[in-house]
Image (cartoon, rainbow, N blue to C red; front, top):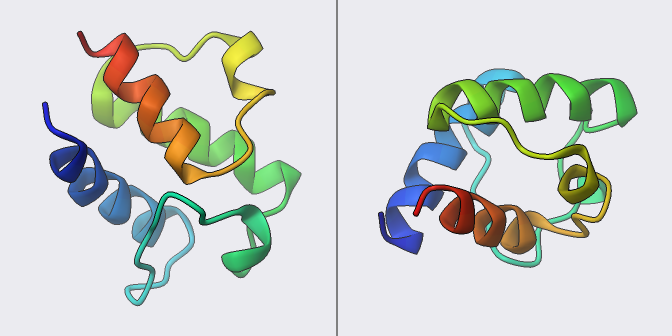
Length: 80
């Protein structure tokens, strides 16, 4: 899977979780950039990402993610 393919799928997940069809993610996108992305929605987001990519993200990796770019890196690593 390429980084571009991950972003295509992640954009759809974010749009669905946050009910916002205008979301376009970038490596440096953080929670403050997405309306409604708080700690509660972060849990829903992680669950939705895990369902989309069919694997569990270890909690140690979840708590260290600083931006969407790091999330993509983790997805690519786990998807190998």
